[in-house]
Amino acid sequence: MQITKNFALLCENTSLDKDNKITLFNVFDVIKVRFALPGVYAKLYIVVNFELKGLQPDRKELVTKLKIKRPDGNYSDVGLSINVSVDPSKEVQTVGAIFGVHNLQLSEEGVYCAEIFVEDNVEAEVKFEVTANS
Image (cartoon, rainbow, N blue to C red):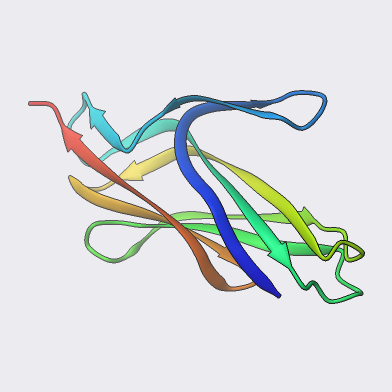
């Protein structure tokens, strides 16, 4: 199976319409917190989209996972998993996942990295910076 990342973004909110078209609200890559660190960021979304080629004929879904790495190199407590439905009859297809992250613990200022795994391999990253307003 060949996986190609189309996009991976961090945003404030998302919505899907009846035709599975996604709308992204307030895409960003810097979080300016107005509270002392460590602290909690209430809600954000990581949205990812991939092109898949050459699925195994018996494959009906893929396991996607989100992990967030802190600036110190350790992972946060966030560990979300989404099973994505796929169509093994299609040679090429586009699939996506929306990870809703609630109450993200921000331990320090610096660059965080949201890593998106597909079947245990990192296939996309979204880096974002956290700064505290003094």
